[in-house]
Amino acid sequence: MRALLVRLSAIGDVVHTLPVAATLKQRGFEVDWLVEPAARPLVEGNPAVSRVIAAPLARASGLAHAWATAREVRASRHDVALDLQGLWKSAAWARASGAGRIVGFGGPWRREPLSEMLLGVRVRLAPEPAHVIDKNLALLRALDIQAEGHRAFPLPSSPREAGRVAEQIAGRAWRDFAVINPGGGWASKLWPPASFGAVAQGLAARGIVPVVTWGPGEQGLADAVVAASQQTAVPCFPTTLLEYVEVARRARIVVAADTGPLHLACAIGAPVVGVFGPTDPARNGPFGADDLTVRRRPLCAPCHRRRCRTHEGVMAVIPPAEVMAAVDRRLARLTGARPPAMAG
Image 1 (cartoon, rainbow, N blue to C red):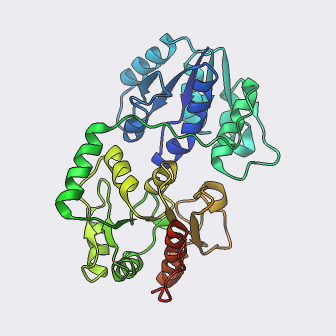
Image 2: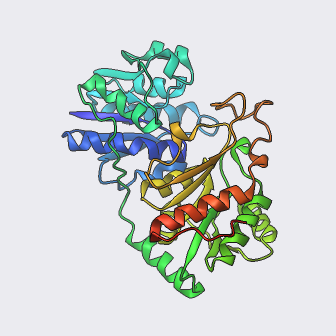
């Protein structure tokens, strides 16, 4: 049996779909994945994925490119296509695959409900699973597979990236360090640089080097956190996605908002503290028993609108001292020691 996963983006959402690929692989499926360029490094060479098909970006590709990709998808002769994104474009790609079964979520569980018209099998959830990982796994019910609760996150082998990261860290003498990742896709989910800077000062006071990671277009944000930390934080060297994974593996703790880097850290089992506002950590936050989140819940929550007057500014009211206290508790769970008295 050959399955096509249609989960085009974003980084965190692709991470949350990895258990679907792992489950299908375990059940004997050949798994292909249609994905956009930004998240492709997470599935290219992935042990659970047989073939990666690059989805063209609608805003940057012409019709000829789209048709060529559609022919490539169709040539693989999939038995089933799973639309895990819930959009018109993802449903259209699943339909274009020519698969014998086109499976996706029914209207209320789709971001663009009317796009269910392009599906052949519509999975409806009642009640909806608590975490988005389990929602994704619930789609496999259409294949008579019960997999909710499965937490396997296969990633590509990255010895070259691991070697480069180890060399870079050794050259900077980061013997005990924490990752602070201030970036992310939605402005409404970001915690202010000044707040991250205050947490960096707290980490430095505890003898832990705060390392600020950053992605494309985020170096200025990282620099703002370093400045706000009174230079106690240091900017990380530039990293690819897989290099970031290797940095997070070596970190004592990762502190981030609801972003792809947080979800990657959770996937590899790094200790984390998440900072949340409009989105619900019970749905897409850390799932490790020892990991922690700090949240201010706006009246519109859970809200997945990028722009919303109701939740605008809610992240800014989360006090750094509260996040630092969560960091102390999470660190204590690593060592079994009591948290230090100071939390600011």
